[in-house]
Image 1 (cartoon, rainbow over the protein chains, first blue to last red):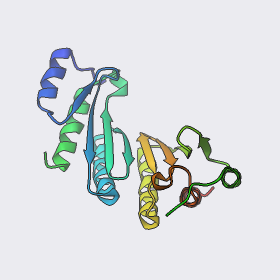
Image 2 (cartoon, rainbow over the protein chains, first blue to last red):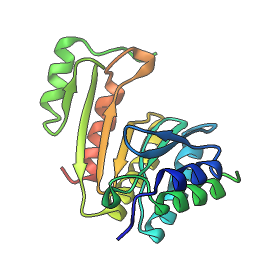
Image 3 (cartoon, one colour):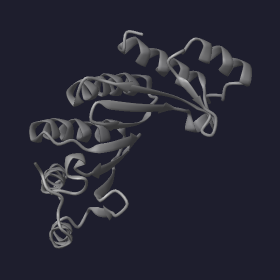
Length: 97
Length: 97
């Protein structure tokens, strides 16, 4: 069972993820990425999809043309968990940031 | 330039797309599809992405695990156009419906 991060753990995690915002209402982290065009945006999504499947942890996300909005939270934990932090780090890795 | 559908044209189009709902606020059509799991949902999204790129018309969509929500509208036309009807038909084709 994955546990929800404590407030202190969350603060630590967010320090390490400067590109991500904390969504208090959802106890989630979010990141928006704007690409050059749809092909580039969807190419990124395909990379994340394969990674997410391998990590068995999946984003909530939406796409409009060149824009991708990602929200990470852990339904089983009732909020943000270590799994979200790991997936966020892996997504940052894809983006080279 | 693509033109927004008239009310009569829209009613005709919706008759031919029984799986789609009309979103009056956005002048758009929407469809939600629930798959077995994430891999199946994203596989479908990859098919739609390639089709959308070929048609040069792209959905607004979101995905949460096995669920995909699609909204089609034509920004250039200020609402629903023939291009949305064509893309909706092509998506239905992928889904075999």
